Image (cartoon, rainbow, N blue to C red; front, side, top):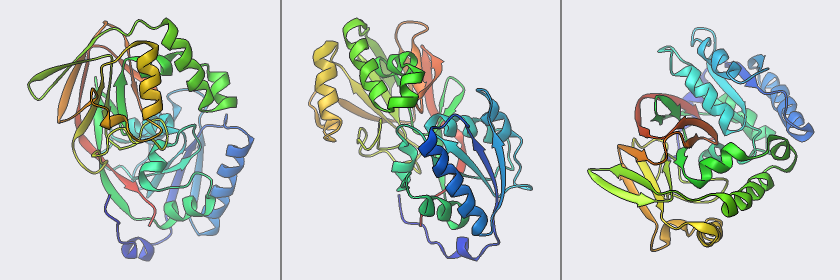
Length: 305
């Protein structure tokens, strides 16, 4: 993304901030949240906290937040929390800006905008003073997403990952589940319809940003502020395919593999086993068949200077 100018953001009054957070974060992440909130108040921000107790709370709290009451709604958590907050925000025409305190496992959104999850000073300064950019959202069977929507192995891994292990082991939980799935998953064929053509693959991810699963580039041309889907289609199956793609991704070589196709489109349809999961921003958001497109709604995302 282009570097936004900070002057106007610096000149405005202290921001009114609503922080929506999940209290189940571990000790280290809980301390990062506490430190960031203290810094926000020290910078003059009016901070209101909303603690979630169940799935759907973040969406409800964001839906109730008006720009008359708040300048910024902050999703404090992982990319799934951001997804919930966005789906609440888009229902209001008078929505505030969106910001993030990254406390998740992968924190892909933070990577996209250059935010360091461990730097409470940078995170708080971004929320208190950072300029904003218009970002385009995706839509998957009526559910909004910000970063990605995928079908195939990755969606089954997201659906099957052990929540307790994820809380304690982080990304390792996804590695464990990927290995387990590689030996038991039958890799059914998917059909991806885009731009009047039909592509075949065993996994397909419609990307809105460059990164996937962490600091790993899957779609080099994707940009949050560009109203396009960059669709990464992986055709190989079985353990061999998992190993091949699993080695290429950390080296940022996935899109360069000869059999991998990356297709730019405004909308796509993914066909496969009816009822198979579709993951969006790291949570299951829909089931196949899936209609995925660029949404008409946008959000103003607060970014580091």
